[in-house]
Length: 186
Image 1 (cartoon, rainbow, N blue to C red):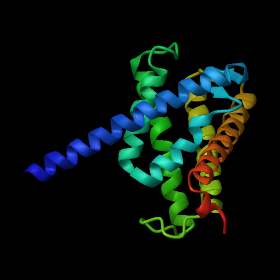
Image 2: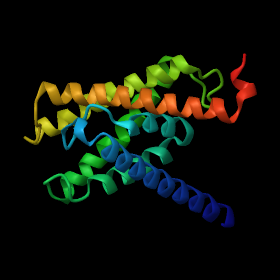
Image 3: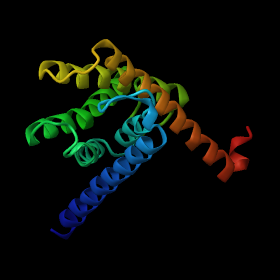
């Protein structure tokens, strides 16, 4: 019984931590790149995009749950829709990367322990997540009559996710190289 409570407590802590990190990264993105917003749902640079596949790789379904909660905290009261719209929107934003990463891991034969995971895999997973997000998010918005900007918005989501992922991964790799200089020399 104690083990199950500890396991549940750990998962809840992970979900909350991921959600708070997502919210903070989304707020940072809005602050830095506010001029690059295509619409409230599409940004030409979206830093949290790299966070999606990384969280899914590290935490799996728990990561997806954290992304759903983080997305809900981010979109709550901002979509012009009701609570059901915000919940569906958030589920799409959290579950789509889990599906994309799961499919990518299967296609690239990446083991559960992530052994052999390299930069090429991360780039491909980020591209897969950006593609899936652009299609699923905008497909839902189109189906509900809320798509603003048509093809431009779809392109903005895809490009924004890729550019945001590239920038965030560059920042992370630079920080790691500075923190561990002996490891960056080959």
